[in-house]
Length: 358
Image 1: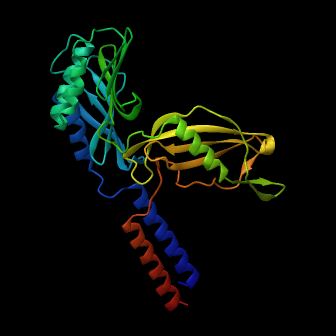
Image 2: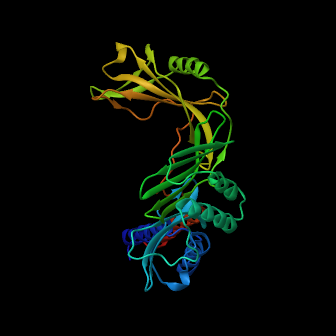
Image 3: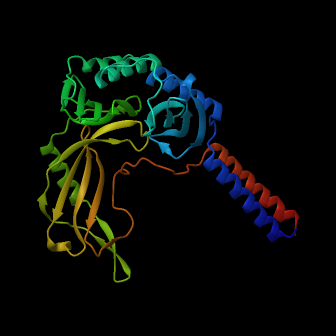
């Protein structure tokens, strides 16, 4: 084999190993383990008698990194003489995250039959508390006490807001974590029932930690934003060249809105942030009409300034920012130690091959 052949073979081999490493994460669970976890949820939490069913695992996949956790999705079909069930599960780093039960003929074989959706939800939260060992779920379930069936409800207790949407065949229950200003931060639990049966459940209450409390007022945010714009510049493509725009003149300031963002270093952390939009006068109106600014509500730190180009303007690269704006990376392959080791071995192999096979 000549040098070109060996180099080509090395590249193909390396790419094959890389693809396998990117699509099959380390430490993935076996089919049996996945099925055991999923059936434990149906048996211990949903209260379905799984022993009455023949279970078939159709597919499991690792679609993306979810808020810093490796996500596993699994899809099952369950068959019995009384009913058939199709179900999908999501696990994050092996921990149960959400469940969806699809339309199915017949009634699920349940261990205990409840008289109303509210009773089902209360029992569900109690069983979920036993399953997780976390007392917070029983505390959340206790908010259902005193709630009437078939009524839309909003109930607040401390930092928890319970919203119930009641329709003739559809009931949705959501527990939201709110800050001291009553703003939902992104931690929530959702239970949905259709025609008296559980349709879906999702829990990201345990996923996130809250970092910081809002201390900067909306008036202070306006001043911080105006000071940031004085130092702001951006680049655009025009006339086949890159042009830097600066010295923007503010013509209008929008209302600031407060919400919570994912931290770019640790996506499991949520922090409070102000969003504010600023319009520019006609100095640069033909290219950039304004900017949106994100500022931490606990420290006043400017997270990002994003230019708002007009229809025919193309920004040259990203805008000037003090920190990268927050994104949850989905499906992005990040180099692991094994990947780096494989790459170094690849380089060594190519060096040896091209040095000795000429």
